[in-house]
Length: 602
Picture 1: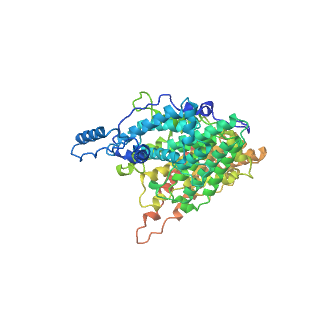
Picture 2: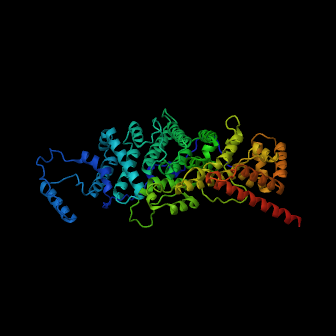
Picture 3: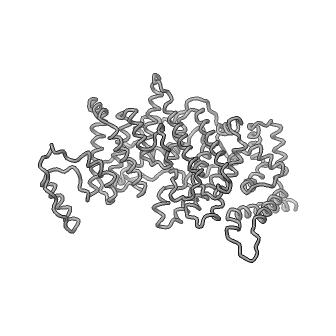
């Protein structure tokens, strides 16, 4: 068990040092041409406004370009000739979009080298005083457009030079204090990630926007902890808590909407989730406990949704809530070192690596859920690849998917204390029961939807996999152990499936002492916990109990079958796939138990 104090928790030195360390020293300014004509809407509008030649510079307008002739090369030569005859023209021709990407990267590189990082104090002061909300709005729009475009094409091809220059430009805006705190807030608002705005928090936030958010919050955190005279101590922590509150509120709304159109549903991308975990670990211990309680309360509230409606809804957004809870159960106090490396690479390194640099990978770093993600990609038809498959990866983990488990799953001791310690704050019996109930979310989609898409089936598989992992780590509640002791067989489908795994564990020597300790933390005395555990194991860890459980489940399924008269039954009246899978598991467990029993007898 990990121990900690209620003191200020900080990120490792690599993450809270000067934000310059997030970037590589080698920022390329190569001017690679692009073959994608879609770059014009990103760069053309504001560059034409900002860089169109003034009349005072050249009062003689250039002659009109000659009429377009057939052939790309001939047209290009004539345009070059027209520009040369009339003098320099700063605005590229709209028929050559690569000119805009070259121009914007050159402009930003000039700002980076000669204005934002100038050694002359006067130049820096003039630059800082010259920035207005209009300029910040244009930069924010460029950042969002570049994020969306690069996510759509799955790489930065055609925008490499702009991506490098913009990453350095955004970094310097914050690191050199060129933007006032008011303009920083305005910048975050324009990006849609302001902790103080009243707008709903987006579920999908792309890496460049996240990089600005993290840079602003980390810089403010460093300033507060370095200057004891700052009056608004803790404002950066309050901003992080506000981000979490807005995220959970948005996630709740998405879950409660019970939306089944997963192809158009907004989802939480892996970079966004990693940043939330990264910011969480910079909070104080009491603040972390508060967020964990809010997450558990959200699980309790979601479990109150009508069971039939929850089982008919594809649990894509619900799986994101389960993903967060599973992560905090393992890494509540200290983050894994891989998390910091992933955030640094995905936000601050991948967009600054030249394409031609050997040995450097621009791919997103994350813990892969290969079992689901690979099957999802293979099953996607070509027309859906650009829509449902646009987010990569779609299914992922926040902690290693295959932890090294010797006997009992290792979970964070402080997280267990928060969950089990104070019943006035959190009812663990209800939380445990809610997690079991949510195991069946989406289990009836195959009976209610005419056709399940690859995203639907993958989301159902992903949700079940996450909750199955979570329930393997959560210590059993007092009420659940009492349920096993009383040999209650009127269980729901989720409880039946859960009992197939936990009934044998109750009496296993590797688990019994751990379960007893957790029962004591829930309020039982050591003697009562030992007696309850011994009695429950004696009743439930037997072949007789397994047979009774199987018979009860089979009777329940038979009672739900339609009465067949002259007409054939509808497929929707027959058991669903989840019912058949649970039946298979129940019968298999019964067979193994009987085999063990008769083997011991002989």
